[in-house]
Length: 84
Image 1 (spheres, rainbow, N blue to C red):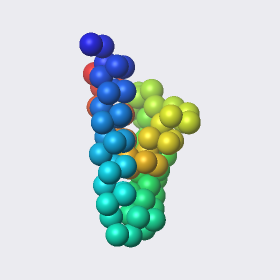
Image 2 (image 1 turned 45 degrees about the horizontal axis):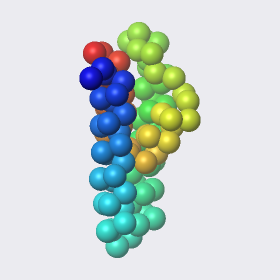
Image 3 (image 1 turned 60 degrees about the horizontal axis):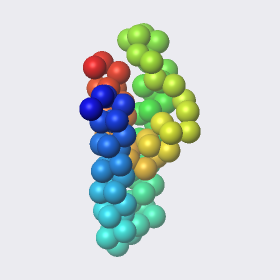
């Protein structure tokens, strides 16, 4: 199994876990917002700092949606995958 398929498998599992988590919460909208805002902010900060650390993090729809849905753990996974 190569790193890209491993990455997509981890994202799929994480997406399902987060979907179940958000559905079971009493305040669904506030839970989504409180997870999405730190995720997108940390992704934009990582994208801006990627030149300093020679990472190849790009703004594309997959990364933006991933950071909105999964939050900071997605950004951490992106960073780890760039170092592998």
